[in-house]
Image 1: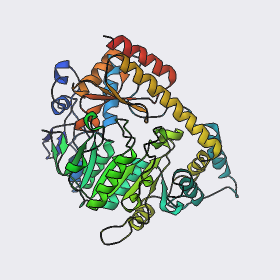
Image 2: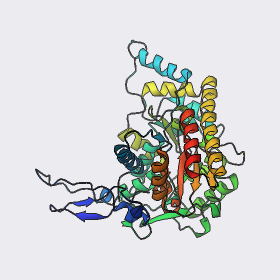
Image 3: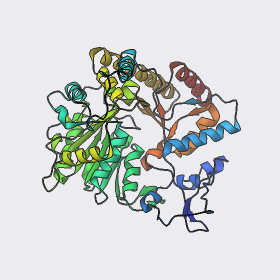
Image 4: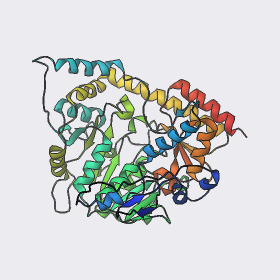
Length: 456
């Protein structure tokens, strides 16, 4: 989901998006599209030489900047007005704790080895080093997936874009609402959608699947139209809801009935503690015939800046003409990607050692404890909260108030950055996502500020 920005045509005929800053609470009380219309203007320069190349009209459909850079822009405005503010960020899901020694040491040794004849390596396999692929399969998909069906990459977000490139712009798409913004934004960029509809804050030709407390954050598939591609994330970002085995069986059956391809985002699966919630879609019978799974080391090993992930494309998954999807993704990866860094892949292999796995689970436990503390804080203050158990996010209800209004109130009262729920989709309005990724001292300080600002 993106922020709503009206467009205008400049003197030189270029369509430009316009945003204005948060200046008054009165503006914040309007609908999201009217809120965004009051933000600072993004100028489009027309003077000087221009080429004869027409802008990609699909990128032109995007209603505004990507959610998190927009949040950072607003944070910058707040700091400009309040230069002494000590900002605590519980917004973007960026890890804060150091990478465990056993992992960083492996990357260091691999890096130093590049300076030796025996340790040097150049181009590697675009799909990743086979020992890492086999270890990933053994660790996360024992008896389900072979290493040769995995593609190692620079992260699941990048793979989502490559998958969209592979699918092309003639397919139809369904997404959870709310969900990770990249699913919608890449669909728009590829030309899979129509224009943005400000009346319902949705793009035309996308099937939005509402995931709300009333339906236990699982879509009503009986009333969901058939689409070619279905994006689904569990545990869900932003709600923190994790789908049960019965729910995923229903989802796989739905995709099989409709002949759809399921893109299953398992980036947070290591956070699942509920034994009834599968950690991979391939625990579900028949999933290999309909599902691609993408995952990442970012939130389990602190690799948000290091970049390493993987995508599984089973041999059983085929297009309508019988052609293996694996073959096409292999071609995309070979054409558009030279493979993840050899140094980083050494770190990935260290992650999967016994010592590395223990260190990652310790990191995950730290963030889960942060989530428990934050969830308890909001519960004690009388808010309804969701998530925070099987995921590092707490989904806080503000009883239908506009999310950007709540985000701004929190920022102004506490100097804490959260994430407005509507940034993940129209069904997210009325909620704020609070991230558990933070240093412990910052989380404790943030809880104190929340208690002071919102005590009843």
